Image (cartoon, rainbow, N blue to C red; front, side, top):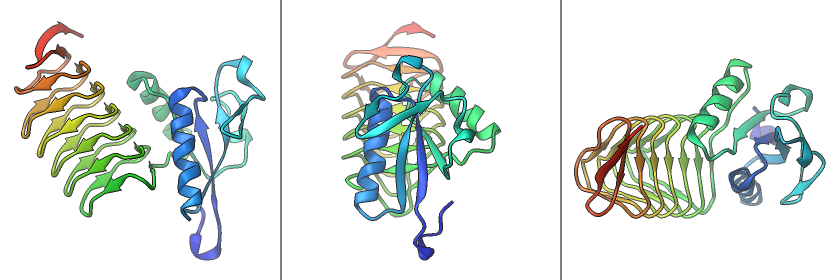
Length: 220
């Protein structure tokens, strides 16, 4: 990566030019404006109709499979779907790419919290002290992850979610918009928590839960 002490700036490619890719790019642009030594240089997307188009003033440079052909120091995966994002993340890591974490300057990450490689913390998100966030996670706009919670790899905490203290969220789980999870509860791997749900009890792996209080509606 670039050395800020030498005035170097890391050039970052965003994988995916859709809605979430643009959220990731905006976080990079805001970080640059706030003095973080990163520069978003463009998008890579497998939709050939997007090649050459502009998003947020940045070009779509080509297919997602070919980052090595463009000079850069890092990448971030801007894809909302957990399974697709994980596949790209794993492939990029296998290629030796530096998949970076990005924290929007208008988010708050407390001292003692940790963020894994490739994680995106969006504007207005709050991460409490002692929280541990895995790799390739999305902490979306205005969500809160309270103290000592643990978020598994490739999970997505959607906009406006409220996680109480010491909540555990399993790998690959989606916690939907505006859901609330009471302190100390565990949500298993590969789950979906419906928008606006109130989770008062632990949720087993692979469950889809909805409602207030949340109840199992299906199994994945």
